Image (cartoon, rainbow, N blue to C red; front, side, top):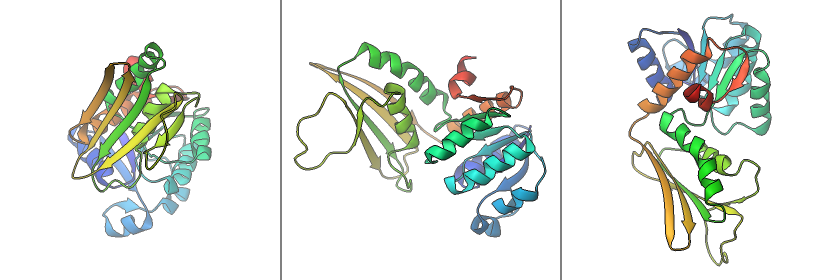
Length: 247
């Protein structure tokens, strides 16, 4: 499998190492002009406008500022696109889904098998525990720039896909009694924690909680590469990690 890597940060570098150790090939790497100027064999996104198809799949773990150029390149060259870029705008997500009409695409906020199993079972748990109070807590290293994490948002969406519950991002001051139609979202930052996510369901005299802990980014890379191998042989469509895991 020949791969175009978009985003040459910690995830991109680990993807490159893992691909090459498994015998796959990194065809080219793309990142901002600043990163490209400091890295070997990394091109700026503007180069994509004249680049032909060089890979079997794009693995994009970059920044939303690059997403439009990556999607335009994927559309023009017909290259399947796997994305783990978080904080894309609503319009960018809609454009990404529209790509599925012509090429196979997949987006996930987290590519670990454990987290995606987590999201798979959450709707059933929430249905069974209807009326219980729900709180989501995520913990990450002190260098993570966004909060709450994209994975925490995905967990909330798995519980409440229709947006019936208000998201309450932390609490402070005289905030009043907890309402029945809210999901509390809490972000902890510190040290070198790769990622922990917990959902608590609070009932009368009992608490049910589900927790996932990541010990390294390798689980995210392994899941993404597994998904990429399956994506390249799929028909055009917009796929999820549930499609990959449970097919």
